[in-house]
Amino acid sequence: MEDFADLFTKLIDASRNHENYRDSECINMIASEGLKSPAVREMQAFASDLEGRYAEGENDPEGHVKKRYYQGQKYMMLIEDYATDLMKSLFKCTWADVRIVSGTHANLATFKGLSLAAKNRKMVVTPLSCGAHISHDYTGLSGNVLGLENINHVYNIDEFNIDVDRSIDVIRAAKPGIVTFGGSLFLFPHPIKELKEVCDEVGAYVAYDASHVLGLIAGGVFQDPLREGADFITSSTHKTFPGPQGGVIMGNPSTQRLAKAVKKIQFAVFPLSTSSTHLGRLPALGVAALEMKLFGTELARQIVKNAQTAGQYLCENGVKVLCSAKGFTRSHQLAVDVCNFGGGKKVAQDLEDANIILNKNLLPYDNQDDRDNPSGLRIGFQDVTRRGFKEGDIKHLCDLMVSVMKAKRKPSEVKEDVIALKKEFKQVKYGFQNVEEAVEYVKKA
Image (tube, rainbow, N blue to C red; front, side, top):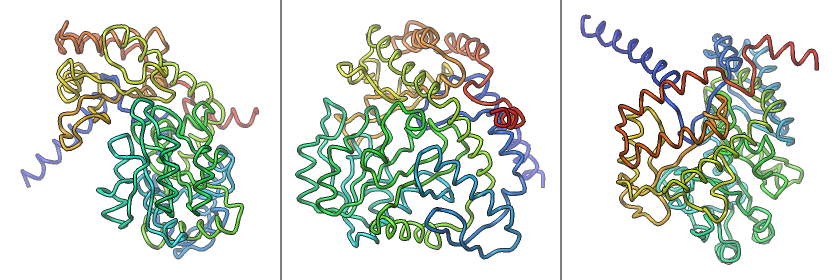
């Protein structure tokens, strides 16, 4: 019992320490993380009973509850339908599935469903080395779990994007059932419009992984996949879209072919891959959707502006930021080559020691078999932007980062400045401070 009690005490202490460390003492710049508003957090805590409930069953063609196999569902069904409709309204689509518990789960259900609908196991994807998520790749979910045959888009490293002309040839030759866009290291909009015609020609469904850029899409500053030719969007709901951890799939099934695909995706959601759908996140997802409806454009514009400002400033101070000729980025993130400063692993650790949290990242020209020692960093700006950072603050933050990269100051010295800087940005912007504030805003509107 003493060992058990000791472990329990350590668990509580570590949890408390983490909350203070990452929320109060660190500047968080990992591109795959998001920041919830106080209202979203409050709504998530309020739904504590919902967190423990089950709602297995089928949904209808609009994404609403059709049938559930448990009792006690009369409000749970409404909650799921309302959350679904809020997401459909925000993204101007006619179908959504919010039962998905992560972005990877969204890819699993979509890739499985579309391969069943197409009766075709081939999928054209962005190369993993060029920014695709591991779930797209034959080494991950797509290949090792679903057994799909992956064929890579041709990628132009200089443009940091898919090569349209050469990928047309790949798609035409491969005749895949699915063509995917989107990814994790995702700086520029992908050429959906340019490749839609050849996808239709070979009968391929078009899937767009928006996990990293969903908030930018909601804000209207990146690209609009569903209007550009994507059949379905898959996404997490907790990166640039500042909701609770979870996932979503969306689309406009306006034809019999797409309606068939929806049925197959829903079948892949339940019964193939889902039992508990983590219902407690859905009310908070609705609050986040409202915040993005009201403040999403302003937030998204400032995120991109901050990322581009950082790219220019780091470049002017001797740091190699990729795609300088293209303005560095049109999304929330930068790709930075730090091999001259010791490589991605070393620099990421030095910055962590200074309480600046980001991640090392392989760049397309790196040795892809040496994942632990990449040249690059991936730097995200959605967290700092939501805390109120503007361009001047970003430049000051870059000065701190450069001083560590160039070993002008010890990380322990910079850490003190980082903690002091963080104290200046205590309030989350572009959202509501509590649920009642959101309710009153809607009533007035």
